[in-house]
Length: 212
Image 1: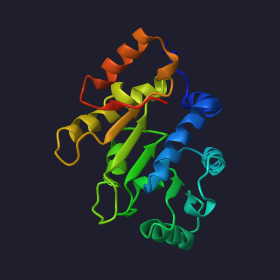
Image 2: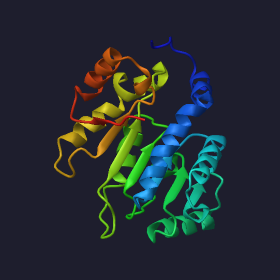
Image 3: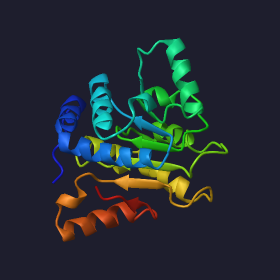
């Protein structure tokens, strides 16, 4: 059941505390890494970014192929990180809202929107993987639909929500169905609840629900 609205801080703290969910998400990222994808992981707060870094290293990601770029990353080092992502020396970048700014990495083909926000941010993030590059895979954008009401509102109920963007993308011919929706709680539900959730998410378009 959806809980009553509370302040964002409380919702974020609850989200941070769900360690089992973060392990499942990290396993999806690791699977994409093993398929030789160039990946950006959008997260929130330095401690969460560090936690994902440690999880991914534990799961087999080469520490020389993963990098963190956040607000206090020095300008010169940011340039080095972006250059390393462009040349595929680094395969995973863990970052925050920095990716919403004027950063161009044409080699990038995958975004894990682990800490999703509203419509404007989403358009920017999808745009990061829709640029041409001779060596890139087909784009993959993975959005995480959390049950907490303050997250769920930003997905589909507020005026400026992410579903608006996904409906728009679904009408284009760029790549068929490259947006994947993930509800991390999906497999813990009954068959009846799973069917309700599947219909709710698929109602607007032909998005896939990834099970984790």
